[in-house]
Length: 310
Image 1 (cartoon, one colour):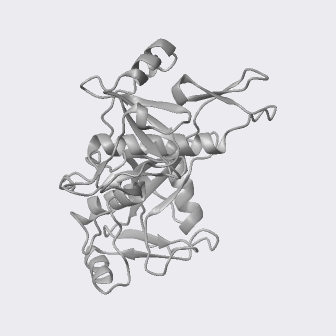
Image 2 (cartoon, rainbow, N blue to C red):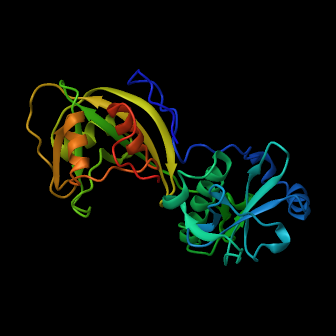
Image 3 (cartoon, helix red, strand yellow):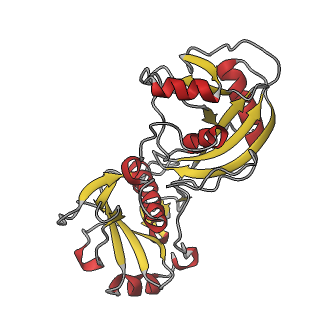
């Protein structure tokens, strides 16, 4: 399912479930109405229908999206998702899902890590656009209802002419280790009792990514960190984040001081202690979909015990 972790703790992450898209997004064609009309009329073109973050998926012989030709797509705004290596255009349309024998609705949390590279990228792109269009219908300047432009990648206000682009919120997520190479795991107040993960938080205005890492660790558990290293990123369109993965180290033996509004509890784990906690059912191993899981696996040295497929 995933490549074996590299020996270097600072090498880029080699596999991220939602960062595997292979289509050429052909951004220059988004304003070419003649090209878009021709692509939509081409019987080879394929359409991903999405409704509330889910699309038709088949699971045999392997998980795959079920795409339809344009004449079988529901009415609705069209979003150009890209063109594959054979020159086939791919669009997304938000609307009622078609009933397809052998297929069932599924979303990113269930299939994002199971789909092939092209399908994973298609669904990630479409989920992000569907949510943005659904929550940004009105101009933030004057309140007028906006219209779709640039093949689904811009909304334009007909009253003041302002253009509005899909919003992406950068968030840092960091695996913190101490001098004994233990990993810091924590639980949020709303999480189940057996869930633990690494620390994360949104980047604030006027702040670098490295500054955000240091601030979030200090705010959430009261620790200073050093040696902040970037390892990779992936979109997290649930609803609109871009997760940027880091490692960081802390020195000394300072006590953990969890912020009660952000962290219910936090603790250090050796590899043996984490394995024992998972084996005992005290902690549920994360699936490979999130960048958090990939960072923990990098530190651990491979897949975690009892790791779910997604």
